[in-house]
Length: 304
Image (cartoon, rainbow, N blue to C red; front, side, top):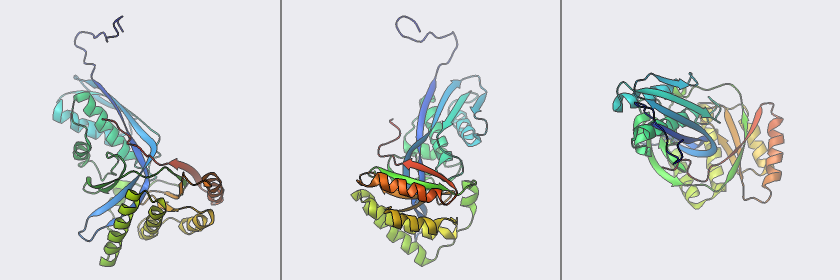
């Protein structure tokens, strides 16, 4: 730094860099298919997130740390090829989100990467443009959008923004292992006309509940979605968690539809919240798997 606070540049150096983050989501409030054949999910943003830092180097090469973040590397390569051919740089990723658990870890990495690389290159990093960059990479959660959204994850396209939820806590059991989201989304899922009609009704009910800030009504929908998902990614603790929900006064069960997590939803405004969460935590520990606490995100995770 000079005395004036300006950065001293070496001759020929390019100091363009970008820094960004993106929140994860605890599974989905609802996931299914509509009568028109559209596969959709509804996000439940949480406070845990992925962070990305990118330093542009016009002479290349492009490197990513940690090296196993290959999807983010592919995304950065595509953005550089389109806007800075021959350029490279250093991309560093850091995340609070466990991998393969249904917390949108990969989506959060990719969104943070798009924002960081786009920021360094002076590109549009609005949600629609981030969707466009992510579409060729993989089916993606809607974490490029703030708040709770209905998202067409296979098409990587926003369907509808629903707004925010009141603060809530999720007491979760991790049933172990990892689920590959890309492989999961390649499995055929068969829905009857009765199934798609039910999902339409559930989505209508959830939309009204989110917009009214009615967490109890939200919990009823999430519970039904968890039950319906047993056909595709069964959770061995679902019956036990339903019983714990009834016993502790949880608002419902929340499922990571393409992950290993199953959680109980509690309203932070409930005067008995602390006691209920403690009782639920103890009951979940008795199931023998890892127990984690998550807080929902009640504000946008990214400021343009």
